[in-house]
Image 1 (tube, protein in one colour):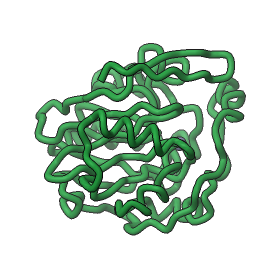
Image 2 (image 1 turned 90 degrees about the vertical axis):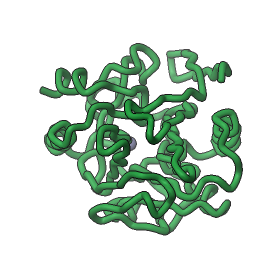
Image 3 (image 1 turned 60 degrees about the vertical axis):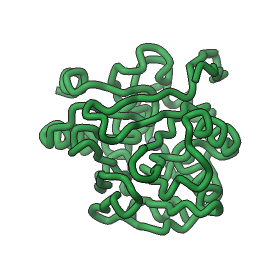
Image 4 (image 1 turned 180 degrees about the vertical axis):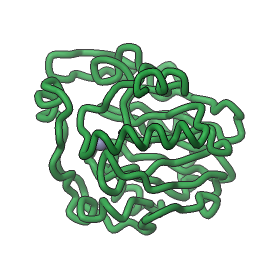
Length: 249
Ligand SMILES: [Zn+2]
């Protein structure tokens, strides 16, 4: 658990512990997080294990090692939810699929996943524009086993929760709700912390890239209105309801 992974990111060098366990408030679904080079992969521990996101292309070995440190045994993972078709979230989906994991992705991002390219990234800041060169644009293409247009019951994968389609970051973005809807795994709906999540990672911030910023803000308010208490993020996090409400009021 104490392993430290370091990330060299353009002018910035930072270190972050990986993997780590995050217990959901009700603790009925435990959540473990493996922080890879650019993004988080979360493991939901229910009757089986479901992953949320898959990391960047070429990180399958680090992902496998991180999951092993979380106590995930090969063959325990039934499904992986790809929150959207950007390369740092969909990068190892094909590799997982080849190992028997059912891949769940949003219908609206199918055009990305079947081509294995993340499409246009619309920057939300000058720093984000600079950061773009560090993000791989292509990954191994895949045809999702489950294409979510509206919602999907994760009990089919052995975890008490649901996947809902919530466009905004991309057209096909998904959010995973567990713990009776109190915990939302939101992908890139927003990010945590300064300097790509390595300083104050729990502090919610506008994500570097958004297809539709006003829609994203409406989605955040929709989740707050549903009663979400904790937001588990693709970068940094987790963020509390109070902090999210304050940042995006
Ligand atoms: Zn993204």
